[in-house]
Image (cartoon, rainbow, N blue to C red):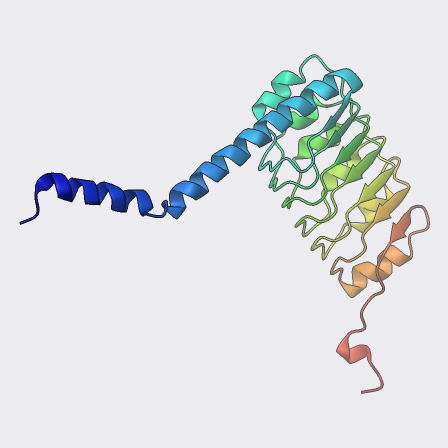
Length: 212
């Protein structure tokens, strides 16, 4: 039988040569990245306190952290950029806390709707919700009193309320390119003259192709 001392020494040597647990490594990397993201968010909030422009793009956000509202509580923001994150929704209080912004960029996220309270963004002039997962155009956007430009391209929008678009208080341009709009809606949007609506060419339905 091998002496215990010799056995313990061999176990220690073998343990030193073992590969680290991949799960532990992944957890350490994830924690480190999360820490960096927090530092980035705080730093950008501090910049916004100086220039009134909040840029939280590409910060790995799944939502707008409550800390952001706290840090911005004494700042009259003019612009807000939340693009290039994985945000699925913004809360109703967003419109209350940031009601002075004129530009809001929500592009390249995973949002499918906006809270109705966003209609209270009384000073918003430009809204970008492109590259998300909207299946319908958020009606609250069409009720914003000063909205001039709405970018909603590259979503999954099939149907829109055309009457709401034409009745939008200040809307001048709308981008709906690369959305699977129904042929009926596409044709109705083409007839709008009050607003410049950007549309992708409508794909011909099989039954419309007379060459078949």
